[in-house]
Image (cartoon, rainbow, N blue to C red; front, side, top):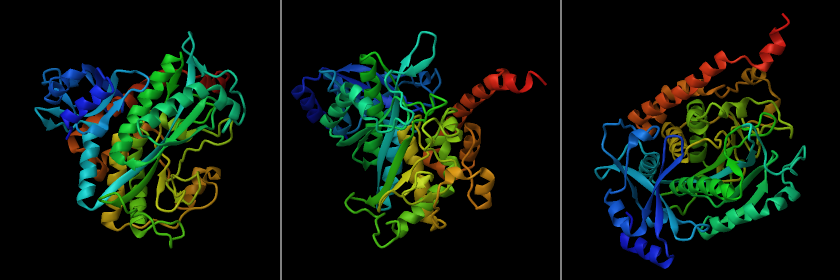
Length: 449
């Protein structure tokens, strides 16, 4: 639990006068109250109440009592380097002092505790991609950097230099908070960037991803820019992935249980069963790791201008091969490539852990790893080779999640039902809009018939 005296001392040393008491909603969007530092103890006692009905997926009506947002550890306090006197705190939702089952951070905390009871610590590293864009007065968007026009802009040196003030500020601030950033690059699309930092236990990483998104957006706004993690903001450009690197360690986090140097891919028997679990639950996982209507435009897009989508469409794994849903880039870890920028990092991690451990529990084994460029296969050719497809849209993914007992249990049955209802409303709203709209494609194809 949070040591109030030590945290107040931290505030005193850093001259922190206010903190953002923050939690995330069902979509992963941070919600917060601004609280004076001297009121920390009152906050921990539940004084900073939230009306849950005002937030998506928190499981309350307008008649229900307030929820509190409680900091649970000193490590969840993030002083804002660019805003002296203020700190951001990742908290857990509680009701009358008890954990609230509709809190994404609590769901992951519970999953981590269950894994620890089995002798495991789940570690995750995330590669969040984002665009720096310019919102125009007519509602359209464009790339913020007018000079970023290369047909193949990946690793563009001049683009990095032009955006260096923003990027180096973000990196400097993250490292002041102990992230351990080790690289930043211009990604495959114009105006797209990625910042990578050290992996950690899944809960710490989820906190860091949540804060990272907040920091990138806030710092972009200060410069008159807009940062977006939307999976597919531009039809002709590569989308925003949020690839997740996964490994199981012993309960103390000192021994990597996925590592076996004698295996061709460097994966232990435990790791292969974990991987098989992810493949087995791949379709239901999409509803949590690719949870928006827009996510499936990233999956199903034809090759963009740069020449590759980098997004998987088939349920397959292989070695250091980016056309796979699960890539094994190095011994002792695997990369899940289906997650995108709209995913809630807490729910995505909890679901992946549950799927993997189900594979371990059942002793599943994956088929032989695939090779070659799967992007060149048509769906018919893939099916002929025994390779199944990921869901084509959010509606299909939600259907798969609803019948996946393992994933629904990991979320909690009540929360799973709320999640499904919330996301089905999103899908139905989109489907109704599309059904009524007449697209330019339809006009070109049918007007002259």
